[in-house]
Structure formats: structure tokens, C-alpha cells
Image (cartoon, rainbow, N blue to C red):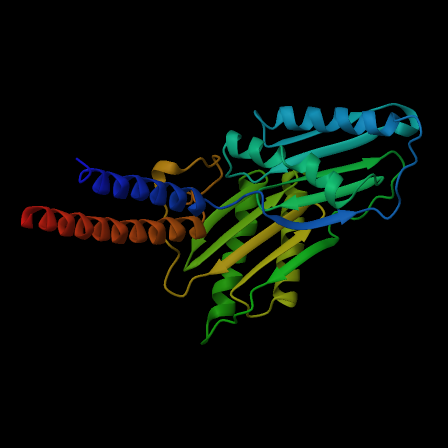
Length: 295
């Protein structure tokens, strides 16, 4: 009677294994990219600022269930606080909410009670500032990261720059968001939701110029300006295919780009590992059955 429990246990382990692999394969949109915290903390003996920020965060999180960009103001007079959130244009409403809902806790943890803060995650960001906070240029670079690997061989710069041009045009026609595959490159650009098409194109152009200077021949890079950001990755063997069935992209998201390359690769690897585990389970069960027959 105890014999059948072994294959069943193996099945349970397999189910758990596959679940973990597939859940881990999804890109973690809540991964921290960078933080920006004002040096000055606000004085709040009466809790006025705390109440205003709490109300602001509550409003932003609730709106993230139905839109990918929202900007609002809370408080009055000197305690007025303006804030916004934005999700990547290719996130579903559920992913957007899950991303944004983590931001208030991160603000408090990473910045504390400062008069202004910006927390950028892989899939979304939040920004707030109290009345009178010094403004910066929309073109100011906030953060950059460049791949450690440089492209080998000739022709990369031309391919990259042509891809950049496609992305720049696409983000204008896409009204602030565009992602595409172009000649073994995956490119994505996005502007803050209240930036007009023309200004968005100018912002992305500036980000592209910064990428060309800052990242050189690196096969990947991300440039975050105050009002826009770009991301690109070169895949020498071609951009991994994406499953169209799981696409939750916006209209401006190019066909076939519903998932990111990293997510697809992770699913492939996890699936392959799962198949291997199936084989091991079958061999294990076969061995048990053989022993059972010998008795």
C-alpha cells in the first residue's frame, strides 16, 4: 500500500518545482533600479506632512489599478505635495498595481521623511515633492547603467544607431511609449505621461545621445532622464522569441514584443529543467516498480 505514494510524492515535487520555476521566470518588475532622496527632511511636529503624503500615496496606488500614469496634489499651502507614478507601457493593470503598491513602503524605507523623493523600479516609479522644491531640467540625467560586455566585430554602432532612430520615431508616434525588436536589438523608450509628443521625441533623442557617449559599444544600456528613459539590449544570436498569448502590451507596443527577452529565456530554461525532472521521476518510478515486481 505504501508503494503508490512514491510516484505521487514525485508528482507533487514536480508540480512544486514547475510552479517555482515559472513564477521565478517572470521578470520582477519590483526590482529597484535607483533612488533619489532630497537631503532635507521636512519638519512635521503636527503630522500635517505625514497626513498629506499618506493621502497622496493612497490616491496614487488606487489609480494604478486603472491607468499607467497619474499625477495629483494633496495638502494646502506650504504642506502642498505634488506626486505621480508611472508604469512601463507594456505592463498589465495588475502588474502596474503590484509594482506601484510597493513604492510607498520603499519611499519610507529608502528616503525617510524627505521633502522630495523618487524611487525607480524596473516596472514603475513614484515621485513626490513639497511646494517650493527646486525644479530640474527634464533632460537632466538621473541614472545610467551600461553593459559590461562590448560588441565584437564591426557594424554594431551602425545597427545600434539605426535602431535608436527607429525607437525615437516610434516613441513619438506611440505617444510616449515604444518597444521593438530591430536587427537583433530590443529597444524600449518611454516619456513621462504628461510630456507632449514633440518634447518626448526631444527627450528620447537626448537620452540616445547620452547612451552613445556614456555606454559606447556596450551591448546593453539604460539611460534615465528626468522626463524619459531608454533601454536597449543587443542579442548577437537574435532577440529571443516571445509568446504572443501572454502579451499585455499597449497599442504602441510593437507586435511580438509582449514579454521581455529575459522572461522568455527564463521560461525556456525553467521548462527544460522541468522536463529533466519529469524524466528523473519516471526513472525513479520505474525502478520502484521493478523492485515491486521482484518481490
